[in-house]
View (cartoon, rainbow, N blue to C red):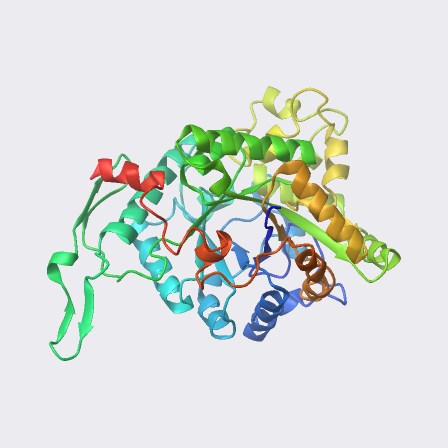
Length: 462
């Protein structure tokens, strides 16, 4: 029986998933500027037995036409947000086993800058850090914020990301020998000079020929997460990721994406079962099914077409409300629109045979946003459905996407996690202290391992 893993999907903003929920009386999301809010949430999540708290993030925002979306600003839809890197050391001091995953883009700074930042976090958390590798989101807005004349093409961003990860991994894994750091008071020796190595990397997009001053952290390389189910994204995940987030749309679509990523990993000589594939999940759970449905209805009543359109525009560059509601997204392609540079997964899912109309897309995405599967019911029904989805898709776990945080996370922890634990679906005990050890149930150790393909390729680049 497969062990299931659970994370919590968050942003350091008022709400997650591109949906509207912070004004609801059960939500404390608007307290996101208060460190105490995050401390309470991290403790709730750890006590429930989650593996990690995942922070999405970025500099983008939804654009409608050529300006920021009004509803995005007025409702706080993927607009307001802070940098979660700085709250993680605080949360680490108030937890002992919970992992933390941060989202960092591969296109905005040099790999050496990111490497030192994540080495620092891995030290400060005792080896509980993961890196969610993204090539960019809301690229039109990011281009505006950073003064770029144009968006970097989608496939080029993935080519850049491959070099970025390879160079960062070499800094983490090869710059210091295991015994290079001595820190001996008696002799006054800090580090063995012969154990510290110059890293030379000559790529098309990134270069380096210096020394890396950050001593090895407990994991050296943070756990490598990646999201994106476009063809290029799947290939990148098969090459680089240890944990992959796939879109939780329908069980059949998700199962196909999971199978394809595992196939691509096997073609690259990796054990496909070592990859942890997860999808998002929004859960409305209560002691009774009737109360769970009431919570769902209260959430759904807060959503509008304008909210759906703002989020979709931020992800894809396409304003659904400006299109003919009775035609499909093919009208954007026919007009030579921005398809292909942003949010390709969220565009391609609505093309092809039996493609929905724009009106049907708005209805389908209402209350969904970027969220994955939705499960509603009493604790037994929710636990049953989680197991069913895992069996139907071959997923290894789920990221719970809060709606009325942290109350719904506490409810999930109190009502559902004990049932899954009784059924033998959660890990038995605490295999090691690092995030990598937890996600591999103790079989993968704390380190990335020399068999990982990114290290084999980077050695050839030296």
